[in-house]
Length: 166
Figure 1 (cartoon, rainbow, N blue to C red):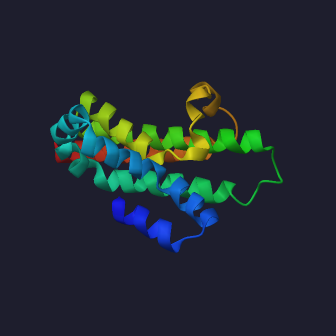
Figure 2: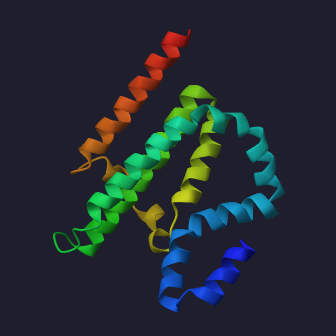
Figure 3: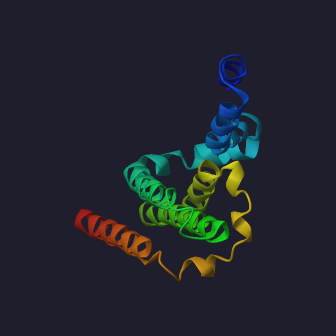
């Protein structure tokens, strides 16, 4: 990360630097844990095979999350900032649950919890650090029904895959 910091210091305007820092905030936090937290390092190595087993599902979860964010971005005038913020946070919760569900089906409960923690780290941005204050139950209602259907389809595909392997 030092080379990224050096590049940002020398080559990027202050305004653009804030944008980049916001975008890489989660990855930066993950690297900090990997480099400086022995407990996290131990857990990461303990669950490393689960990352291998779920990486394709994780990509699907990420794609769905990004699609929701792209859908919400151009509509600031159609809804209040607060409601848009809630939608972003709900998309993030759905992404985290998607990763958790995949890991739960393909690995075990401990791995699922750890991978969800990693997904949460990666999806955190400085603009959305207060998402945890939003009641998760609030996300299960409203216009995000399509996200729930996608999550259900992924879950069904994972179950069918597991049955066919048995």
